[in-house]
Amino acid sequence: MTSIAFDPHVALVVVDVQNDFADPEGSLSVEGGSDIVPRVNELVAAARAANTTVTYTQDWHPPTTPHFAKDGGIWPVHCVRDTWGAAFHPDLVVDGEVVRKGIGGEDGYSGFSMRDPVSGEDMSTGLDERLRRHGVAAVVLVGLATDYCVKATALDARRLRYPTTVVRDCVAAVDVEPGDGDRALRELEAAGVTLA
Ligand code: VGL
Ligand code: ZN
Image (tube, rainbow, N blue to C red; front, side, top):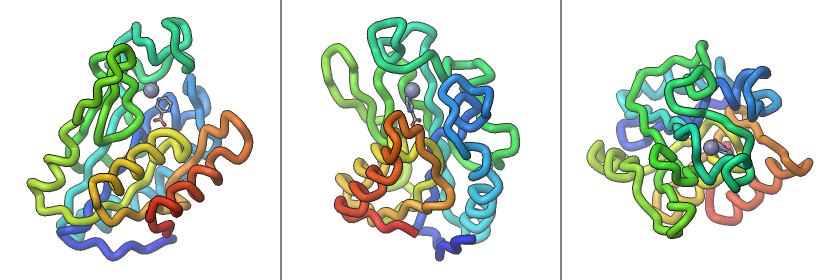
């Protein structure tokens, strides 16, 4: 088990550990997605014990959004708001605040920002503001999926100048193309992300 030295300035962000990604029956099921849950829970406990913030992101789409293939995008329907697929994995310990993304039909890969698929305009999810309000100076990222939302969240965290760590045994990849997850990790390292 990877141990992380949490303190009140080092926050944990748990990305999209939702049924559609984490459950084998989910519509965008990630291989090994549910295997990370007990390890993520250990980090949640360690972060809470160190009195630091834990924030959970949730992909939270309307039933119709240009994010979905049926509406002109690229993904099967997933994480539709208020459905089983959008709910957190039942074994995930949820002990912190939740930040939802994609709620207005945006492409919400990053936990920090959403992009209007039509206008291309970037919008904040409020995560950065929330972390700064809590005096957070560095972030530890875990969750799903390595090659999409974890990657986008980690790149945004670096852009926002947070020292950023991704915990390798607490992420899993969609791997649309074999090796996407590994390539994403290399790209993150090149962007200054620490792999733990
Ligand atoms: C994600 C694809 C589409 C993710 C979200 O959470 O990684 N991937 N929407
Ligand atoms: Zn999505």
